[in-house]
Image 1 (cartoon, helix red, strand yellow):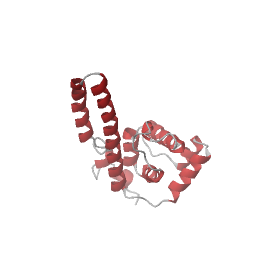
Image 2: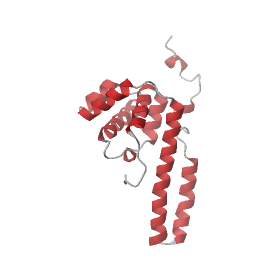
Image 3: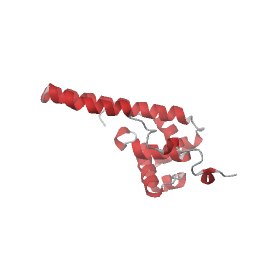
Image 4: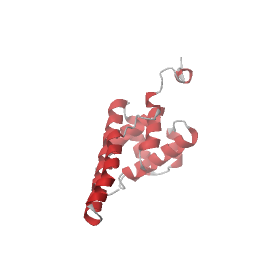
Length: 164
């Protein structure tokens, strides 16, 4: 990802990954919407964790465990990140997911702005306009909650979630 785009903070990623290890709906959202390229190159440990989380979740449909994350990423930086994640309290899911959605929209807009400027300056203004219209609508209508288990029916899989 270009350094001109907004970047995730490590603290936010700690909270996001904490939720991904605890909540299936958050893990599903991450697997579907959090692109590897959105994590800055300098946060390599987070890239490794994201890859492990998404690969594991897509393969099994189950939450990854801390043990599998560290076993599959035997790297000091990953160990330190996992230790920080484990030491966190459980963050507010609504706040974290809202922040993630806003971030993805902003970065997509920044990329679109760059692409439109290049088209406008190097190809033609009309092609830039034609390209901009549907892409901007996609950004405006984007939701990480749509088509995810985020809004799963309360009673769906109740027996699976009921541990009493």
